[in-house]
Image 1 (cartoon, rainbow, N blue to C red):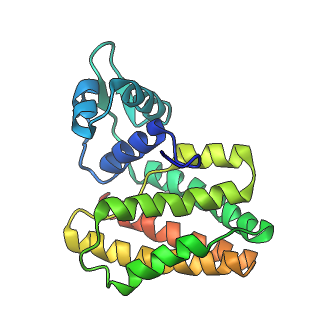
Image 2: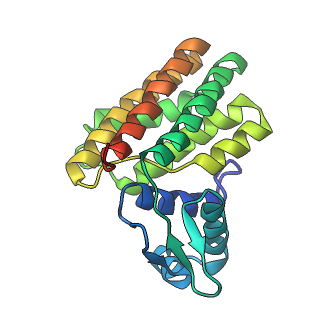
Length: 214
């Protein structure tokens, strides 16, 4: 059974599609089939339809009556605007989590294991799940329902490059960054937690922006 704090299916699906659009895997004008995406992910059409509606509201796709969706053209400013909102809101969430107190022991134990294994053969699915668990735990610990809602809508998952070496480098850097963030939260160092989260998301933003011309 999933944790009560697990992201809704539509958010998780939207984050997968959002990452693919941001990184150029899906390009402007590409067609997204409701049935095709559902089959590819091994899920029903309903959460995919809900994810499509979320992405249309954000301006990433245009829905077509009974024909899926078309990927819209996006540029550096679009990507930067999205990540800057994440930076503002999620850094505040990290500071609030530190102020209010958050149990970080279980998450840190998983991160230590990942770090100590060297991250050379990291399981992508396990990393994505842990990454999601860390961020959502911080959002919940901030204890603000509207802040949680906005961060859910902005979520785009790990911002990695296309190649395996780029992915592994991102996983390694993120693991150390997550450990640092959680240490500051554990020690109730709110401003340090805020700054560490800013650096963490800023690096993710730069991973995506390198695919867009200046």
